Image: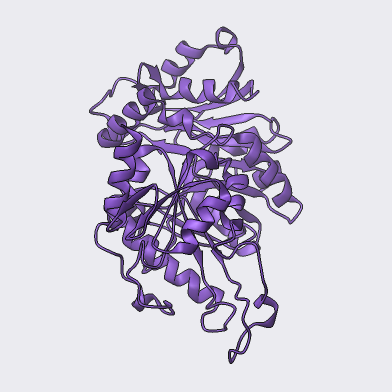
Length: 424
């Protein structure tokens, strides 16, 4: 698979760091961003690159040449006038005859592209022309937001200026696998925005899919993010999040752990975060561990809340966390309930299952999907079912007001004690 990197950005917001080179050539932790990208992909078997250059493009040519010094092959397309974030792709139609990887040139990342490619191949069988990597971030309030259904098909794409209320915290990371067929939608010389003009219209055709991943992807386009990315590279956090490597996770119960316990939550209005929860989850995010919510939701089987209604409740939870710079990496819920006799119940969901806590099914599924080492992971909850679930999955348990390997009065206290114990 060929790699196309859009490397023509001026980087006006990051000019205070270095205005003498194009944005992708700004050094982060001792190397240009573009070199970090090339090295990450070369380790995964990618050797053929096309750089789309523009502003100060000669700096890129002088550094990389034809790529042989770096063990790769590089071709260049130079924009004589700005064509937006996708217009130049028209001129690569004769070169790109198969699916290709398209990257923004201003991101630091380390992601297992083989996993994403497998997902795209499956999506293509369902008609997809594009698969985009989505992930949570710590500033969703000023990001475009993407919603996908259970099969990964994108159903909603909100840009920054669009009205929003409750929303899932998933944004386009700037890593895409595109079918070459998509290039037929472009026009010679026409300025084209990749997101607005090319990808988002695919959503209405049912041909845009998301590959959701907790792997590290961050643009370094502001001085503040530049500092953060530099620190993450030096600490090893960037490479550690690649899903080809075993992950550590902190699994979180929902009711009574993240949100105040009020019995079953049936509407977004009934969900209120416990004090200190955003701070606790921010600490998990900063630690490099995955924050994974696992929750029993029998209200689905009982017919009291629809799947769409539950999604809205969880969207409120993610919105409230995102407003304070915290995020969850993945959420799993069990919709089943073994006891019958409820008016409006959904009979096919009234079963004994392996995902309803204290069964460990949700944790085992997360471990499979996210390559989690359960023996080095923790479960935090406020009930005996959470504790039994952790033990059956092979995790350690931290209890909120109940006994565990670590105990605390709330999530923030538990997280602080847990991290303190691990540092002993």
